[in-house]
Every structure is written in structure tokens, then in C-alpha cells.
Length: 70
Figure 1 (tube, one colour):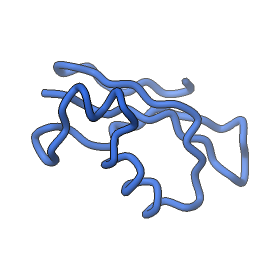
Figure 2: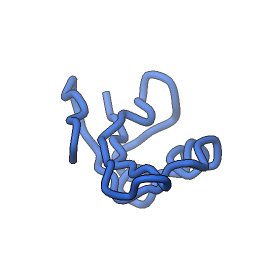
Figure 3: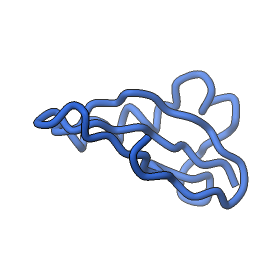
Figure 4: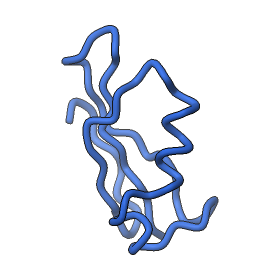
């Protein structure tokens, strides 16, 4: 399983950042190559969450959980 984990910061409070699993290969066509190249799934997810700013993202293989306060 490939997960896209985004570091999201609130636009209202820019220092309030967290990691969130945006999508996994179980639910979307996520390959390691598409994830590393910018993940079109990530762009789609961000358009649905306009109150947050994408600070970073990473690709993860396996069952790793997102961390708070990234």
C-alpha cells in the first residue's frame, strides 16, 4: 500500500501544522512514481480543502501512521 501523507497548515493559524494521510493506493490509483512526481490525487484533495495550505508531502509504503505537529 502506498500512502500520500501531507503536511497541512491552517491558513488561519500558519504555525498550526499536522500530517494527514490524504489517500492510499487502496482507494486511488497511487503509484510510487505518481506520488513522488507531485501526486495528482493530492492536488484534487487540496481543492476540496481550501482552508489549509500544503507545506509538504511524502510517500509512504506500508502501515505507517501520520504524525501530529509535523
